[in-house]
Image 1 (tube, rainbow, N blue to C red):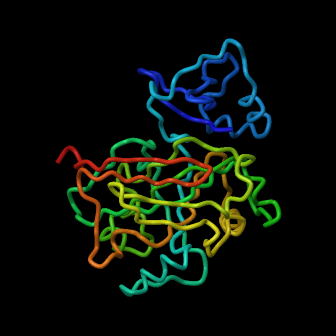
Image 2 (image 1 turned 180 degrees about the vertical axis):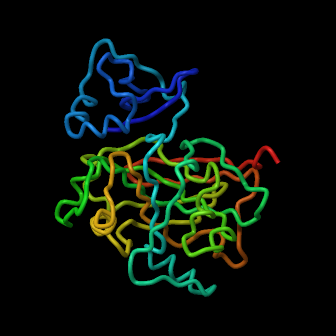
Length: 288
């Protein structure tokens, strides 16, 4: 099942993707306020979303603006250095990682939709992309065991962990350089866990202006998703709707020789097998 948040005219709504359109679920009398609240209902909520009602509205995908499926997660976390190929290219410029998991926050104000424009900051010329598989938590969880970890996942999304490299390297936390407004596009919808038989066997590709820059498999992750959930839930409670971005393979622009950073007018596409694709145009940051 694919669950989408979208804007139709002036109305923000959510529904279930069906064919070339969306069955609108948010207009039902018993609908929760948004997809995050739906996930908080657990399996009961997903069963509700999977049912059909003759009164459900149907809108064509071409007539809506897709938004980030979870518009306001409590947490948006990303894992650095989770592909050996990315670590290898980073080592050439003296960047190294510890053996453990290195997590950082992306402030939720950076979230953008799967087809929204993204801003090239006027304070930096080192704007970069990172195609990643995103995991959306479906159940409030703490101290999760490895054998139970997959069961707390609601589904998967495509993420572009966009980065302002000089600001990223200002501090070990990376938070500033990872959190500029619009620099967290994800979507195009949430693909529920049952649709993906193995999240560690998906092809991940990123293009810039039609040129393939990243081409890898999630099987190449150093830390598996189960280990990520164990690690994070040991420290704090994971909530329904929290988004975990699982790392990026080699091919980012900033580590090419010479670097090839994003420019105004570029189009970045990230596609993950079985999940979908997001495309974002780069525009100049407004309001200077």
